[in-house]
Amino acid sequence: MCKNMAMVVKNNISAMRTLGVLNKNSTALAKSLEKVSTGMKVNSAADDNSGFAIAERMQVRVRALDQADQNTQNGANMLKVAEGSVSSTVDILRTMKEKAINAANDTNTDTDRGIIQKELDQYIDQIDDNALVTYNGKTLVDGSKMSKGNATRTALTNASLDARTTGATALVDLQNRNGESLNILTTDKITVSYVIQGKNYSKEIDIDANKTLNDVLTEAVEPYSKDSDNPQVRAAYNTYNDSVDTANATFSTATSTASSTYNSTINSATSTYNAAVISGGTVSYSNTTTTLVAGVSMAASDVVADTEYYNYASSELSEYLAGGGATGTPAYRSKSNALVDASTALSNSTSFYNAFSTSLSTLISGAASTLASTTSEATSTRNSSVAAARSTLNHDLSVAISTLNDDLEAIGDLIPYKLNMEASNVVGQDAAGNDVYTADKGTALTITAAAPGEKFQLAGFTFNVTDADGQIKKSVNAVLDNFTESIRALNASQDNSITFQVDAKANQAIKIGLTDMRSGALGLKGEEGNTLSLATQSSANMAINVLDNALKKALDQQTDLGSIASRLEQTSSNLHIARDNVLSSESTIRDADMAKEMTEYTKNNILLQASQSMLAQANQSSSGVLSLLQ
Image 1 (cartoon, rainbow, N blue to C red):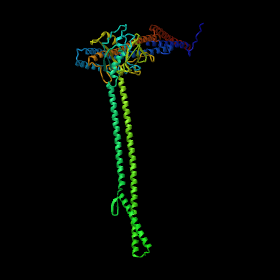
Image 2: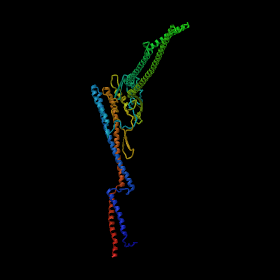
Image 3: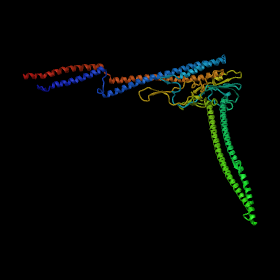
């Protein structure tokens, strides 16, 4: 039912309602403009609060995946630098092997081999330079980026011998993997050669019917295991003996000096004492200058004489008076004066004697005290000096013993004479402490170094069997000398591996440890600077084996680098796919359908214009009231 509208002026309800619609259309048009201009249907949380939050999280994910992809590509580039260094080392090792094969040919003289050796030494230096390659200031293959692991020892495994072969198997009974005899004869000879710390060790051994592989190994290292034959051990003991002799000589000199000082002091004090006892200094007695001791003796003699004279004079006077002699007579006076003179003389001599005796006693007592004190001090000084010398001696002997033990331990570290041979399907343990098995998990013969670490690595090992005419038995050596490195010697390391953050979450990373590619780690150089030798035909022949092992180490590292680089490429591809899918999902939530939004925009624009026109009409509707007021 239609309600008639009153003609009012104050409240133009139609205009107000039309204005509300206009505002609504204006807001709708503004939103359409924003969506069309940004291309997004969700521009703020007000548009779609849950959709906006989801889209923002997806945008964070996209940016994180982009950074992870950048990390992956940077990591791949770093590994390319490392692989380039190792690849260069592999090229050098190939060239070095060519040089070693050349040096092993007896068409070369030792002078020729010396020239080749100089070239080899330069190659070894270049390998060390290659290992110092850096990426963004970080060295890569110098052993500073190794994974955490225990030290491992070299293991060389021969899987060509019969599975029943052990170290106790006689050489003449050796068989190949198929159970066929190697035909080693008692007239043959076997040469054992190996390289440790850049030094070559080699020995030719006669074969008999009972000689075993263990016997051969023991005999090969025997020259370096006996103290009498090992120059390093002899040198260590010579150093120890020299140190002991020096310490004893120092002690002897110190005690001799202390005794000499003691004797000199005692002799001086005794001389002073004797001088006091024998003479006591000079005195004047009876108008004569004499010694104190002589003065005592003279005074004592005078006391005796004066006492006798006094007794005589007293007796004379007493006899005179007893005989009735008068006191006033000249005879009385003579006798009385004689007694007085005797008494005076006795008193004087007694006084001198007492004074001289007291002085002499005091002097002797003082001299004796001085002698005793000097003797005590001299004895204490001598004892202290001897004690200090003995303490120094004990310290020097302790240092000599400690140095000897350290030297012997260091010599033991080189252990060219402590190679072990075992038959098992376990060849040793890797850096993680896990058992390493033979390829087919069958029993094989393994030679290992006696201690773990690069310092002890067995860089190369060969058996060479020759017949009675000195000809090489190639078919035998092809089996017996087929020892390959199954475990590489590594030093213990903390976790210094490289970490590549390759995803958007924490701990979504790839870690890679890079081994040491320096010449020492490859077995080409010892700690003392000894380099792989090509000086003789036999050493050049041994070098071929060492270089084979070094190539294996380098190729293993190159393979690891290549596999990780390939994985990073796959990781990058996966990140691209993940990014694209997340971005697609975000687009579904946030991106605007432009055709739809343009349709909406056109509608809102027309509605806005219509509402503007109607508002104008509504505002004019109240003007009809003016006609009533005329």
